[in-house]
Image (cartoon, rainbow, N blue to C red; front, side):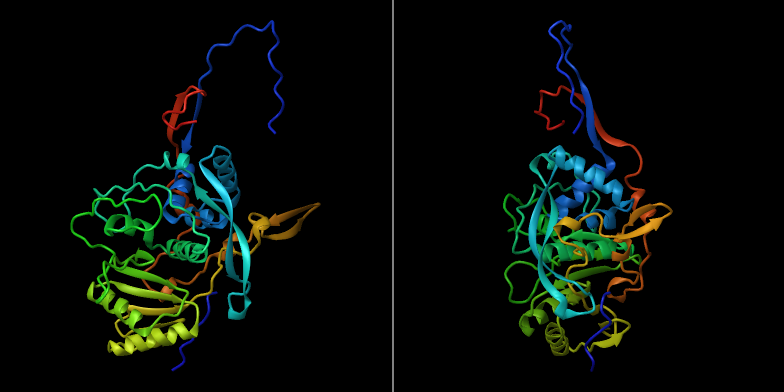
Length: 368
């Protein structure tokens, strides 16, 4: 059987007051975090690091709006920029095009964390409120972390609700990964996303948890390595025993072969369907995936990764970011609803969430 599937595609100077000037009263300023700022901070906290294009993919609006807000949040110390080594595929259709490169990423600061309101993670009871501390950025895990954000953007654009592994670990696992993290009280009625793998100590969290438009839950695995067949067999069995669908986004044919063998040992036959391999009941799916959907340019090409186009006497740069969004649903799951920029942006378009009059010399409450 052919195991391959279609690829995935200065500020101005202000003169000092003259000695004759009258003393000025204490000046109060109003500076706060608007809804887009808070949305940017929230997703950066949930996923540890993001590329510039990710904010647009996840939140809609326009690239230029996100750029202005990101630059302002960096200036105010709410976000920070870092350079991280990554592997990326120059051509999504060519496995051999994967190369070593570097990328600019945004991470949340301790100060930025103070502006994130508690939220209810996807798939948990309404009384489950979470607000995690920032995680340490792992240079060795940057490929995987950015790959998970790529997948999150894809699922989000297709109308799926997504919860990150970090959120799941914080709520459902005794030992959480990441310096500074702590365990939150586990919500009643769980587990919600973790599964019990035979022979494994503790529980296994998916890389992402998603809910499709029909309400079905899926465990999403980004599999960049090639593990033992028995390892895959245990996880596949655990997902099925928990009633979760599963989509494995895999990088190589070697991994696909081992996953197929693991399924065969469990009596699951995988057959080609569109651009995936899937089980007869559709609850186990394998899809080829290459890394680097968000890495079209090097660190110096974060924003103008577009084409120069003549418009009359002017030459303008047309953003290519919309081209990074796949038009087919991940895993060929048919319960989806494609989201437009306007639909995603509706959550943050209106109003400000926290604006306070503060003395510029005070910082006890963390506000600027």
